[in-house]
Amino acid sequence: MYPTTRIPLLRPFALVLFATLATVAAAQAQSQRSASESSSNDFALIASEGLSGGSSAAAGGSAMHNGDWKNYLANHYTFEVGAGFNAPIGNDTPYITWGGNLTVGGGLRFNKRLSLLTEYQFIDDKLPGSLIAAVSNGTQGAGGNAHIWSFTMAPVVDLFPKRTNSIYLTGGGGFYRKLTSFTAQECCDYYGYAESVVAAHFSSNQGGANFGFGLTHRIGGVYGDGKSQVFAEARYLFLNSPPITASNGLGTTELIPVTVGFRF
Image (cartoon, rainbow, N blue to C red; front, top):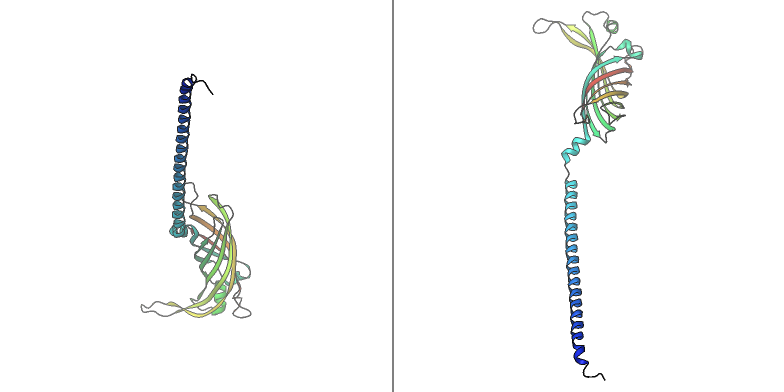
């Protein structure tokens, strides 16, 4: 049993110890409360950002789903128009002469390197005078022409798609119609002038093919990287048209169409 004289001396120490413990307990409680609030705030912030990000992603997905389809079409469709001349080659030279051509087409642009075009081409060539004289027996004012219409599919491969000036390969095949006509002068029209009429014509429908290469110069764009191009090309055209007779040679056609145009 402790002496009664020591009890008054222990009271101050007990009060100090109690105060210390109370302060520590309060500090710990405050620390735990702060940590809890911080965690709650962080969770709220993360949740908010997550929801915002999800909303943005959903909006982006919706935008991608709805799409700016006009830009998509502008970037994935391509069109061309051109005109030029045709040179006969091979065995066809005695039966057809030089003439002109007109080409229009359109199709898909899969990427900067590869496109696939559907092309319509009209070729207008004359017939040589010697052939016309032989067929018409020297009739005065006789003439003739060969017209070719075609619808073909032609892939276009750009060898240097990132350059302003490039080279491309192309070629394809499809449906061709050839019409060879012989004309003669007939007297007279309403004003008394002689006019040309078709005296005879021969037509055929058949398959054909062409292949060749071309040069392009890219125009537009800030750094010369625009989609529009000026092109110049030469192709070999083979048309498997049947001969009219065994001896007149008006059959298989071989030409070199040279075309200059614009592709966009």
